[in-house]
Amino acid sequence: MKIKVGVLGATGMVGQRFIQFLAEHPMFELTTLAASERSAGKKYSEATNWYLDVEMPEKVRDLIVTTTDPKNKEFEDVDIVFSALPSDLAKKLEPEFAKEGKLVFSNASAYRMEEDVPLVIPEVNADHLELIEIQRKKRGWDGAIITNPNCSTICAVITLKPIMDKFGLESVFIATLQAVSGAGYNGVPSMAILDNLIPYIKNEEEKMQTESLKLLGTLKDGKVEFANFKLSASCNRVPVIDGHTECIFVKTKEEAEPEEIKEAMDKFDPLKDLNLPTYAKPIVIKEESDRPQPRLDRNIGNGMSIVVGRIRKDPIFTVKYVALEHNTIRGAAGASILNAEYFVKKYL
Ligand SMILES: NC(=O)C1=CN([C@@H]2O[C@H](COP(=O)(O)OP(=O)(O)OC[C@H]3O[C@@H](n4cnc5c(N)ncnc54)[C@H](OP(=O)(O)O)[C@@H]3O)[C@@H](O)[C@H]2O)C=CC1
Ligand SMILES: N[C@@H](CC(=O)OP(=O)(O)O)C(=O)O
Image 1 (cartoon, rainbow, N blue to C red):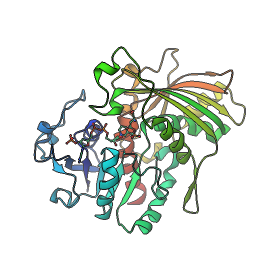
Image 2 (cartoon, protein in one colour; image 1 turned 90 degrees about the vertical axis):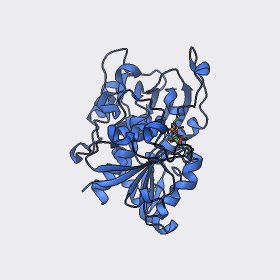
Image 3 (cartoon, rainbow, N blue to C red; image 1 turned 180 degrees about the vertical axis):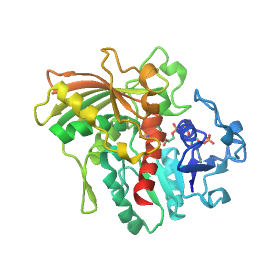
């Protein structure tokens, strides 16, 4: 039997991606859509400014949007909620769902760095999910909050994991070129971004610099020991709709040739035998000298693969390369759904 699920923040940019992936999901039945008071009581199709270039799934068009209150009857049979709430609201509302026994798979940054909250990319650190036992004891709830990282962090960390495992990491520098969808529908005015670039995204560099070390850290005696290497990020907003590009410079502990790095990335496919519906090969390598490009490559692996190109020697670091991620799929909704699929397969 399918597990009943709901989406919080269902009308937003990430909420819409959740709906795209959950409407016909083999493990989950999407029953409940929640948003603000502005949308509640309306049909989903009336409440939403649909921005995706795929049709709104027929089965959600007439669903009545509810408020984000776990006591609403629409949440009664729901076991899992996917949260695409703004972070300040997530801070307040996600615990209310966990207290009602719901598993909350969250995109929001509110709880990512809490000691007892798993921050997970299943291909990288699925074992950190064990933190939920500590979380349940400490917070006294039957549900759980499980988070996925910031979109830019996910892109970088997936490519760094196979390098770290084989050669060790000493220092990493990342310059990002981030799509406007990352800022939400009303996030960046067109007059600010067209014919332009904005070399600042609030808190993004700090998130990349801390979340990466937690993700690549080791779970020991119920605590995550952060990975021990230096990471510096410089984040920019560019006039692309979907698809974050990152120029990544890596100094490894052991000597490594670009070909060896490429091979390590290409072989990285840790969950391929689990048959998770949203899983795709985590890293796809493009050989052309002018790839990856957001418009051409963001949908590879249904938007779940990180597309890497231009792996080459660097005169200061060991290697440099370019990585591309579909930021609202692999960097957001798809990441949460993959966490939930993995959790259900391994723990339920
Ligand atoms: N993992 C990642 O890297 C990414 C994470 N995110 C995170 O996901 C979250 C959502 O982002 P995004 O979809 O871009 O944001 P949007 O602004 O596009 O959507 C926000 C959603 O929250 C709802 N909402 C707003 N106010 C309230 C309220 N008072 N009560 C209940 N619901 C409310 C909105 O409903 P309504 O339409 O009714 O106003 C809407 O559904 C954010 O926390 C963001 O930081 C985003 C991108 C990538
Ligand atoms: N800040 C990211 C998206 C985002 O919302 O990140 P976070 O989930 O860490 O708040 C971007 O602008 O592209």
